[in-house]
Image 1 (tube, rainbow, N blue to C red):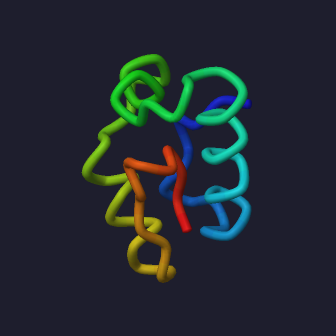
Image 2: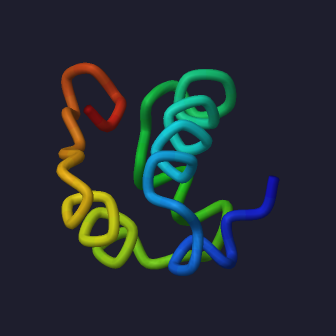
Length: 63
């Protein structure tokens, strides 16, 4: 799944995909995920925050 179009994705689906990728491929490291997909970390966080999801570094996921 390519996250290049994350800005137009449904936020609940986006959160689910990002959390799956964080868990399965990036060990909860959001910096690595955003670097790998070449997307803006702050834009991703803002998009999910608008839907009520916050990134919890200690859990390595959005909730």
